[in-house]
Length: 158
Image 1: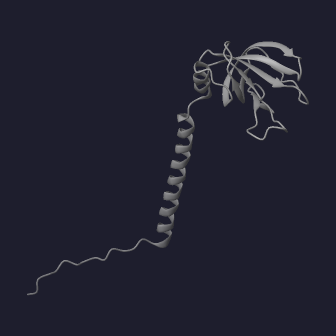
Image 2: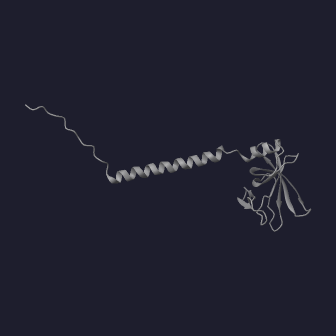
């Protein structure tokens, strides 16, 4: 009598639609991973408040920063030369910053004490904590543009 041999089964290839579905899942997972990495990268960057704190301690100036803080005081406009709207912002580190917003050809920002603002501008050292100026677009300056975002209404003032 012949001995029964085990039947060897050939591995079946997955159907084409299964391969395409797997490729779609892999692509979606890779895209999700990229989104997570981008979100983590932005959180791992040094916050503007820390950059300003380092600049203040080292008496550095001319550094472009982006910072968020609460308006602690609204000051009278600076009317010498080009008019500027001035206000103080307190950051999460407790540092007070004077923000000077150029009013020539621009509308005033409707600020109130306690408003949260984001400011992008050039930091200049001062013994009181520092000044952020150039928080606006400039036809003359070719470098980065500054702005102020009032979080209460979400509007960006350039």
